[in-house]
Image 1 (cartoon, rainbow, N blue to C red):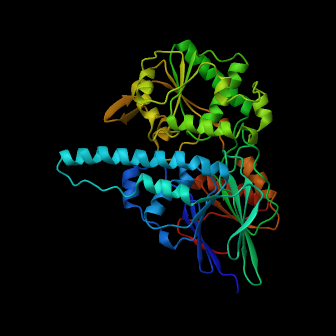
Image 2: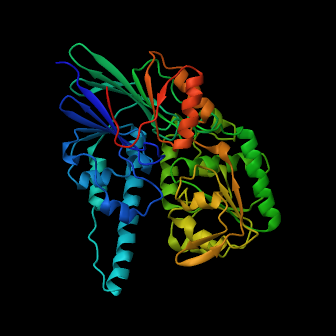
Image 3: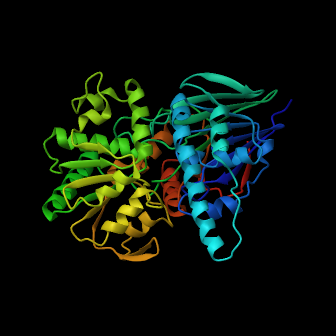
Length: 468
């Protein structure tokens, strides 16, 4: 039968987070990712959220990687009727339970607190829209596929993953859509890694394609040299040491926390780290670091050997002053440490998690330093602090910002503009490009840069549909 296929840009269209794309192939419906929009109020967003399709009609979900802005709506998808297969890499399948259960637990805890507040005020309480069992069901629906292995998950559809080099298990999705006399190849980049960063391999090159969905998070700029970034971090840590304060690093539990541990280990290995205490203050980051330890043989061995890593060691072994703080009491005790400490805590954009409690207790102290090492989306507390806001409201209190704020861009796990251009130029077959997963200004700049090298790229709006 002739090939009838279309793609709808459901999420992350002219926006960085909320990755979700719907493919219709003949009578089948396939989702590429099913991610949350980050920076918004989770309760309000989840309770009013409406999918642009019927979840029970989705036949297959193909997941690029485990980050919440790519996977976070899967429990809600299940709660509303989805019961199909979810295909992902083995690394993603091992990370998903940690991230999704944590996300749902936080939602239920926040809803319970909000309902108590509503009840005291005589307002109506809200029932939860999903449960921990929904997150567990997501895990049960997962089927794994390694890199460079091609399968036929549905009639007329072939799938292969390639290494995206972004985080553990991250994948570039390659799809072949087959009809009776036609075949079209679609490539979805997922999040492409930054070749300069540590632990991950470089993103895989793609030989050819007809249609490419390419992320554009950093389409407007290149990252600074990694050595310069490490020097910049060393200088910020040295200044904090001289000031007698503590250093707070908001970091996502997945990927970024493990990279920051590596960089601190590198500074320690070089004798450039003066702080006497380092706290990894995130139960989820601790769990994920243990998962990374299980996959060390799959990571970049050159990076590991450069900091004295030997077979049988774990990432934690490279920092003798590292303390893993899992309990709430241990986390609260950190705020009694007056100086000489580095605290790594989630979330990476300061829109929740333990870092917000630390900021409440420490933003107003001029001896302290706050180091941002990753992208800060519009609307998040992290973005407001990076943009220089001098007063913020946390837990009902106005907090003046006196801590010194540093932004170090070279540690990004996303490809910069030059890497995006090189990846796109290496794809043969003169494909049609569609820029996703980026803010409009960054996309427009990347669109022009691509045009300069002869590649026409489109910037779809949310809800746009293209024929494949």
